[in-house]
Amino acid sequence: MTSTEPMTRKELLELAALDVLGLLDEYEAAYYTRSFHHAPATVQDEIKRIQAEVASDESLLPGEEPDASLRERVLAVVAKAIERETSKLAPLATIGRTRHAPADGDSRFPLPASGQFWRAACFALAGITLVFAMFYVRAQHYGNRVSEIALINNTEAILEELIGPTYKDFLFDPDTVHVVLTAPSEAPGAKAVVCFNERTNEVFLITDGLPQAGTGAYTLSVVESAGDDSRKNLRRFASTGGVQGFALDQVAVASLASAIWQITDADNQVILTSA
Image (cartoon, rainbow, N blue to C red; front, top):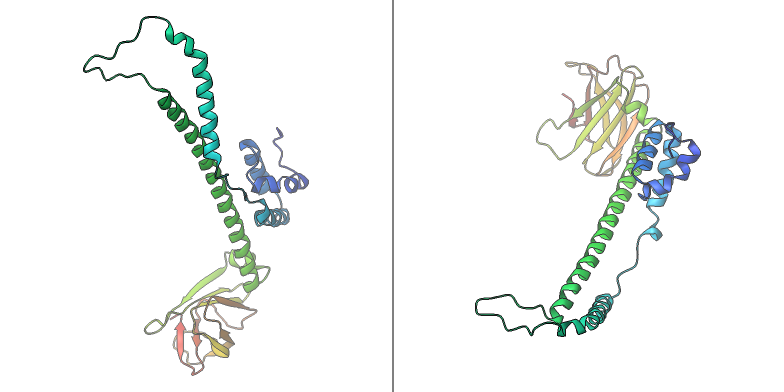
């Protein structure tokens, strides 16, 4: 894979599963990422869907555990190897003068066979521990990648459900303005944001923490300017108690930028306002 040209759609789709599983080498992964960013948005969405399906396939997760007798088998093999090598060197031990006991103060003693055995066993166990650590790091990286892909897809699905399929055009339009609504007195724990675009007269409301209530419990209103007593009700809505939102098309207000946004309850009391 030496071409400097971006991959084709077919190549991107064929390597999507290998990319999400981290099976591409360093060069291929960088090449794939660059080609992905050069691909059209429709192709990128298709790749994301394929990778999300692969990442959520639990059958690909490692399900094997090391055998409980693995340690004993490794130690037994090491012991046999030490015994075999020791038996080969046994005749050499009789060559030369007899070794005398060490003098007083000399702390150097020959390493017995059992010491050699345990030293070899420690090396073997250290190698096994290193292999397990590598498997753990790889599994953790895989889990983080799965969570990241799931979060990206979940965020896109929620925003599309709240705002509509054109939510990217609305949110990232430089003409879109975001206004925060706050409580006029002690905060009840509720929050709200109004996003509007004066060029298109589109309005979108996001609320969080409004006490749960049925249809018509809350009203989004607008006062066209400060000092104006007339309030124009735009929409009545319910609350689930969590994050929710809805869009309004073509709001008939002379200037959205100078307007005062308000949310009132069933008693017509202002609970959140932009001024």
